[in-house]
Image (tube, rainbow, N blue to C red):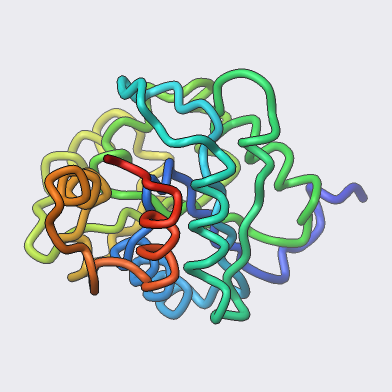
Length: 208
């Protein structure tokens, strides 16, 4: 019996994103997902070269990785990986999941993402393989209406309906885009993200 046919004994949360910068919305979503779905650990994976992003001014991977590490350092069940930043070429989720399946074959993978990104999963590279490998947790603002998307999934992809879960996260009103805008306009960002991250942004003069 190989690793892929063994009974999964634990659940690993995987949270990808540019994290430019990471903020409390990301952290609250990860913690709520960990609790709600009984995840043994949540692994944050900053994107190297995001294939779906049009931004050309994404901060260097080393800066984004450092901000994540500073943000999660006080939570023993949160961890960070540089696997996408260190990998050459665009960061495709399917390649990351294949690697994670080899590293943690005993874990069932739960991919945590925003509901906006969740709506795009069928456009991801090798989406069909991705959908056989993981469970999806869509983090949504309170009041988010997912009926249209779920109806589409039931009609077009009924085999994965049970793999898609929604989780309301109040702190998702915070966004990285707004934080970058605030920094550029010299507006306060304190309490929108961990203080260690705010100080790092200041130290490295990011987003100005």
